[in-house]
Length: 215
Image 1 (cartoon, rainbow, N blue to C red):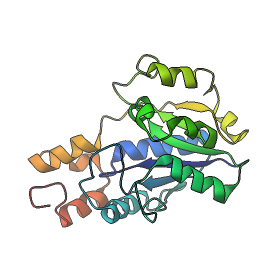
Image 2 (cartoon, helix red, strand yellow; image 1 turned 90 degrees about the vertical axis):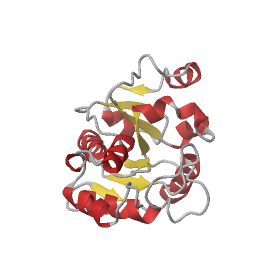
Image 3 (tube, rainbow, N blue to C red; image 1 turned 30 degrees about the horizontal axis):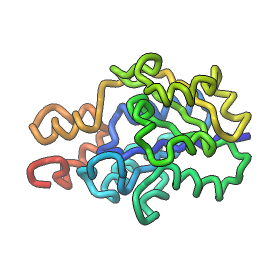
């Protein structure tokens, strides 16, 4: 069955590292990747741009990219953007048998035990974990997470198409050094930030004076 893959995050702002992960997932999973900006992430500080601005930047970034689309479902739901609620909503729409995956960075996956009802997530979806510089999935998983995922690792992406949820797939891709926090700091300090984002996103950031002392 076709795999539905959702890539959540604040995307504050979306940068070339995000796009590299999305493209790698699209190609390795043979699936459309739905980039899904969070409205009010409960486990991190409030983002620097508004939800609608982050959505607009995402739309600019993926325009014309085959297999990458923007999904605004978390922005249209009131309350915190808990992943477990989003996945429950998706299950209601897709049914219990449709293969469903959540794409996250390795840094987010290592912190999974801090997420709301995190153990329940494995009943609702697969995890596709994108490697990130400085994060070792072999050495840095908390003991309780290691125990949960020890027998869930998928050796091939095709396995994610064969059952609805419960597996963890390591997405290997050329590592990109960009991070949203680094990018915001570069904008605020007047550093060289434009090469880290798609040109239309850079224009949007400048036009709206985002991440500067004027924001």
